[in-house]
Image (tube, rainbow, N blue to C red):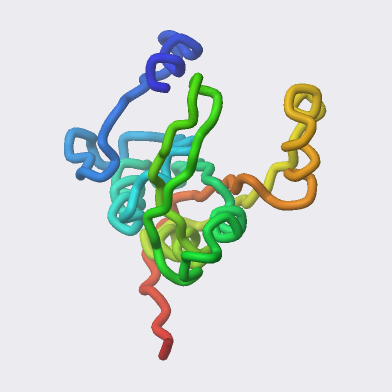
Length: 172
């Protein structure tokens, strides 16, 4: 994906590849205007630490944009074996690689999508549950019909704020 992004963007902006489960200590504080993470977060277990790192490397007012598989969809697929309120490692069969490939990813409730962002000091600016396009309908009509009735993806845009709010406490 980094290679494709570099080819598309050329010299207009730097594209970096990193292990997001490790500290981003090679990046300076407040250096970036934007961090984009399309369909990557599902493979990261600890979002609390990662969002703190994104917050650290973004300038005040900097923007984090990311997309994930929709928490509803991931739960619906695994509801027989999942506990909705837990962050769980699940496995999917991806098609289109010549054969079905098993791919592990993390399933999490909506609260574990939003709260780590807020706790890291981000303000959620926009939430999008995209619907499939007409071009998608032409290529995959059965999946198009399904995705017009249930969400497949969730896209979020969050802005680095000035104030870090303490997390809310609750009694379970």
